[in-house]
Image (tube, rainbow over all chains, first blue to last red; front, side):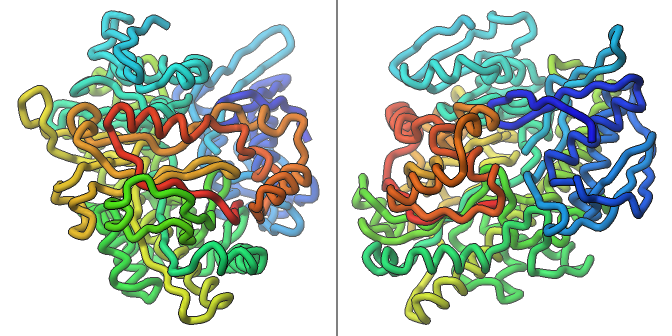
Length: 129
Length: 476
C-alpha cells in the first residue's frame, strides 16, 4: 500500500501522492483513491480490468484514470488490490471483507497539480465526496 | 478581497475587480458570516462565474456559500438561453441533490418513547448504499422509465401515494429528459442504487417542529408545533455523478472549438444552444428524475418503518421536495425586461413567491416552501419564498448551513463514541454506517444555520415559517 497525505478542502477532500516515475505515480494515486473509498487491505488481485488511457497531457490522463478506477469500484463493484499501468487487479467488492469508508462522487480538476522534481513525480488531487 | 458593503446583509464585488469579469458578484452575508466566507476561496470562485459568457445579472452567492469545484457551493448564475453557456460544474456532481420534508400525524410525546426503536428500524429499512446495493432491482427498460418519468414512475410502481407527486418541485419530473444521452456506464453505476441514501452530508433525519414563526404559512403547509416530521437529503447517486464526470470530460475538448477560455478547468462550459450543451441538459434532466424517484422510494420505505412501529394509524404525507443542484430554463423580469435564462443553482434552492403558478394550489397564498437542512445536532428550517428573491436572485435562496471546517479538521481530536454520547445527551439518536461519516458531519463543522436564515430573511429572499429540531439521524 502506498503512502499518501490527505489535503484540506472546506467541502471535500484531496490527497498528495508521489512516485518514482509516472507509472508509479498513477498506481499510487489509484491506491490512495481506493483507500478513501474502502479498506482494501484484504483485497486480492483475482480479476484483471483494463483501462484505456485518454486525455491530453498528464493531468487529464491522471483524472481520467482515477475516474475510471472510481467507476470500477462504484459501478462494477470491484475491490482493487493492486495497479499496473492501465490495469486494475482486484476482486468483487464485499462490505464485510472491504469495509466501506466514503462514497466518492468524482475525481475533479480542482486545484489539480502534477509535477516532476529531483525526487520523481508528485500530484495533488481533489475528490468530490 | 475588495468588496463594498451595501447594507446589513448585501455585499458587492464590482466587475472592475478583475479584468475578465463580465458582471458584479453579489453576496449575502451578515457581519458574523462574512469572516468564515472570506476564509476559503468561495468568493474567488464566484468571481470566476462572473467571467462566464452570457451571464445575466450578477454572479450571486448565498450566505451558506463555501468553496466548491468550479462554482462555489451556494452560488446562483442565470445564463442567457440563446447566447449563454451551460456548465455542468454549475449544477455539480450530485445532480438534483435535494431535500424532501415528510409530515407525520404524530407528535413529539408519541415518538420520544420509541425513538431508539424507530431510528433502528429506519436504519434497517432505508439502505445507505455505501459500498452496497439498494433493494429496488431495475431492468434497463425500467431504468429508462425512471429517467424519463422521475417520481411518477416510483408512485405508479407502488412506491408511494398519488398525492406525493403534487407537492414536489416540477411534480418530481423534468420534461425533455433523454435516457439516450446518459452513458451506459452512468446507467450501470446508478442502476443498483435506486432507493439509497448515500454518504457524505446526505442523511435522513427525524425531527420535530420546535417553533412556528409564520402561523398562516405553517397552516397552509400543514405544520404545527410539536409535530414530528422527517427530512430526507439525498440526490441522484452514482448515476448523476457519472453524468457530470462524462460531460466535464467531453466539454474540455469542445470548449476549444467554441473558443471559450476560463480561469478554472472545473468551470468547463459550452453554449446552451450547442449540441453538447443540449445533450448535457437532456442527460442532466434524466439524472434529476432519477433523484426524484430515489427520494420517493425512500419515503415509501419510511412509511413502512413508521407503520411497523406505530401501526397503520401513522400517516406520512409529503410537505414538499426541492432540488438544490440543478440548471433550469425560466423566465424572469430583469431590469425591466423579460429574460429567458438557464438558472444554475449550485447549492441553492428555488424560492418562488406567493401567487407564482409553479407553486401547488394549497401553498400558493403562502409562497413556495423552501427546505433548509442544518447540521446534525442543530436545527433545520422551513421558509417560504418572497418577492425579493424574484427581484434580485432569480427566485433563489440558500440551501443549508454551509460547511465551516474541512472534513479532516472536523475529525481532528474527536472520537465517534464521544460525539454519539454528546448527541444522545441532547436527545438525538444517531445511526451511521461508517465511523468517519459521523465525525465529518459533527455540528461544529458547519456555520450557524440560524444566522444563515436570519440573513436571507433580512434580505427579503425568503421568510421564516418554522424551525425544526432533530430527534434521530440516519446516515451513511
